[in-house]
Length: 304
Image (cartoon, rainbow, N blue to C red; front, side):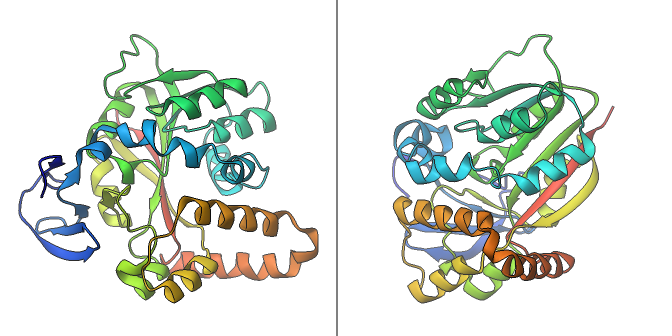
């Protein structure tokens, strides 16, 4: 542990009783003895504060490959289907919105149905979001004073795994939702087939991810403030499994991540690959039945 590392307890139940789970390079992942949550301890200060995302990560989030993929019509298909099923209209805040791609797709596809806003700590991606017509709120979500402003729905797509204090984000989200408002959360699934096959070799066990959720620990994080309406297991990328198996846990650069996103997006948009996409979709559905997909999502309603 260095002078810039921050020790922490369990982000779900706040217990300080934990045992080592595994190491990966300099990462130390522990398992809570009370609720079995997996989390990084200690955490480098730049990740705990969000400084990393405002300084170094902007280059990745604004790379041509990343932007091209995020703004492709196929990028948020699953999230949009899930969101629309429960929220056909209203005011929406996307927490951790990055370059604003989800809100852009929502607004483009369902023009006039939503009043949108995004918030993030990373300045350059927010500049890009504004250039695409997305209203943004800059700075710390926890520290921002929303006054009397409230929302019909809040989304946290692939956000909670990055946070030193995810419980506080859930509580803040609940506090600015209207009565009966909806919250949508998606995180990597630590019970996935990829994790079961690869263990710590999996590329998404890396410094930016401070928390490693299962459906059970994610539910426990949220259940004090929300009713769980649906637990959805989603996404599956066999290319990642193959590459990480061959790479034996080697670090994957941002350029490699961007290149994979671009190839995956091209696959989804190629009409000649319809039979392969149908097989892929069937595989994803089957894995979802057993909770083995790459991500787990919750749809939740605020408790009153």
